Length: 186
Image (cartoon, rainbow, N blue to C red):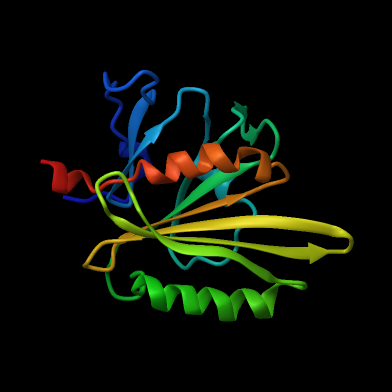
């Protein structure tokens, strides 16, 4: 059974590898290895700057650690879960990529699509890794989507954003690649 609740994240310790993640985190039916140094934000803090409710914003993580209800350096990975029910389903990944292209081009001044690839997670689950930049005045902003979709339209979109996103790019890539479907490993 898949869950869309970040609050139901499994808290079991792993004993694998030299530097195991602190715990396994399940969101949108996808399991990630949560690094020990990363902080958490609650759903209220994570959704404060988001007004469009295309899915359910469930929570966020801070690669540099959290300080109360904020990330230490402003960089965060926010999760939007999709149940797969009517009106709450993710499109197939290549269709979703086209929708992002159209929507982001319209909404962001100076939009430039970056590297976009279908990547394999830890157990081979495919996900769309989509990065882009846009300008606001003289500032260049970076953002990245990782989209995981199950066959029934449920899944999760992880959105990485913030002033120091580039500094955390490797750690975020490693985190996104830990993804697997816990149902397939049972």
